[in-house]
Image (cartoon, rainbow, N blue to C red; front, top):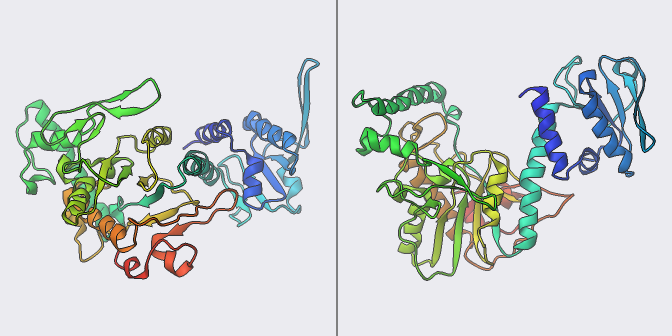
Length: 408
């Protein structure tokens, strides 16, 4: 992303209520130096105003390409402020906890004291669009069990995966030729017996997205025998009419079940396992094609009408450090063969969905998730990240039993 795009992203987070003074306090920064270029002076001014009105701490400001001096802003008699910016060359020997760059331009060697714009924007995005909304949701639903998840969506973690994924992607794209009347082409889903038309339809699971008046974005209903979208979400067969609680899967492609029929998604496989073991839980596929559109994800999360005892697995590209993380990124490691699972660089087929469903079933049953387990989530500003594989050793939360921890 360009500097301009990253700064717009930061400014959007400011509108959401998270500021740079709060960022410094949350991260123990007592003496920050903010560095920008002259062309981004307007943004620098907005940061200065945040510190001007937040009296808990102060900050110093510097420009890379402007001499030391005061910058005044006067709007008649009602608004007059000044900002002293020191040229970066005059501050080389000064002591600062952190030097925070509001530009990607780098004129110094890397240092642990430096925080660069791309990392700053990533932190703010995670805080504003993931962590704060999730903690707000939990305050309203304290007895709903919510977990962020990390799923295997990067074929490059495997030897030869990058090259294999590129070939798969090229092959899969050829399926679009069926719309041009070019006859049959081979695809990574041929081994399941699907026609080119069926493959294309599964690629285009979300044929259209509609936005409701209340801000929700959902898929249009589709009656196709492989797709089956009803009331804006993919159908999960075998759902019991009588149940104790629900298990929701909220997120993009893997949870939506791209490249697979409706009865071979994570949700469908998991529902079948629960039914076979007489566990009265109803699984809901809340997957939508919104990828990293965090606002849409949380609009839909807040519309779930979740009840005490419900379980929510949330998949985002950014995880919330305030919540436990279910890390399944190694789910397709040996003895599984990733070449039998991936259909392109990041997406998987029904074999992969079944494996993930089995992982979730083990997680749920062997770790007493169906009991009334107390989840004492942390609240800001102090948060701690708990990964599934390290939860037992860390001893910070009695969520997982040791017998189950090593099996996933």
